[in-house]
Image 1 (cartoon, rainbow, N blue to C red):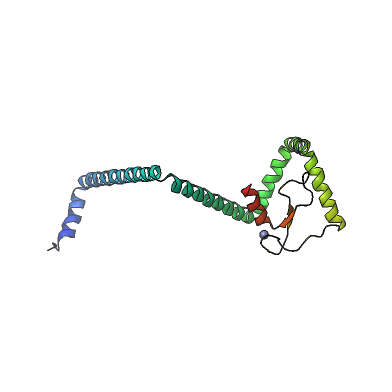
Image 2: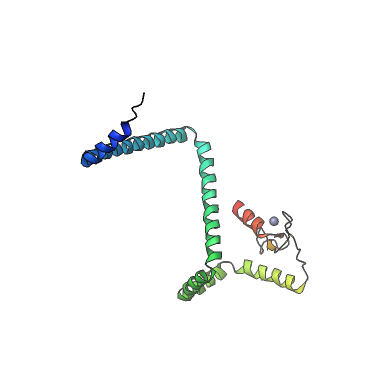
Length: 178
Ligand SMILES: [Zn+2]
């Protein structure tokens, strides 16, 4: 049976010997810390062993986890940008101002490298602007309505006519695939 005076004695003891009490507490905390560290170390070992014996599942988990992490980052960045739009735009403007030379040089490099591709794409854009090619209102892949972009998987300079109109999310998916 529990002693009803226990908590009173304990309180008195604590008041009478505060340093002893402190020492006991520290010992207890150190013990708990050691236990926790050991538990974590064991857990890490367990997980490592499991991963070593299940390489394929581990690969899948790692991929899924990376994807989730990326999604979280993107979501966070999107929200942050929306909430601090003016500050972010100011930073971007400053950055662009400082790196104008780099940007122009990169653009020129890109143009030199993809000259044929860009020319072919500009021909396509011209046709769209002149109304020779009609732009649909919805994505040809998933059918979502809204803004659509033309994508040509085999390249504009290679095959001018095999393009698909896609929404931005389908575009992202198709780009990640190849
Ligand atoms: Zn779509």
